[in-house]
Image (cartoon, rainbow, N blue to C red):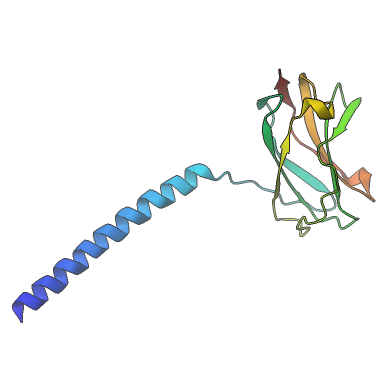
Amino acid sequence: MNFFKLAASSCAVLAAISFTACGDSSSASSDDDKVAYDCSVKDGVKVVAPAEGESFKLGDTIKVVFGSDMNFGGFGVEIRFNDGAKKISLFDESIDDAVIDGKTCNEYSAVLDAKRGVEAADDAYIFVYPYSKQSKAGKSGTFKVTK
């Protein structure tokens, strides 16, 4: 009987140590891999990525992250530069599957493709707009695109 108690308690201690070790390493890596964005917005669009000061190269894939509470027929996504004078759509079609609850972050990948007309610029930003209410658009921080 004593042997059984010893074996059971040893297993319990080993299981607790293993569980703690696994839990610590996985939570640390997931915390490092995730960026916490605040996409809360009322009456518009809030673009949180790319962030102010980031730098990308032509051909890079970037993350476009935005939140909105606007239900007006989908969203257009453009990269703009030269003080907004030049604008290029980053997607062939509108974004129609965004969650529009005013708090959820919607994340999409876009390629900075020279074939679309994207060029090197020091003052690039992402402009996300609801199709039927463009006055409620949001824009990212200014970032750099290099060759």
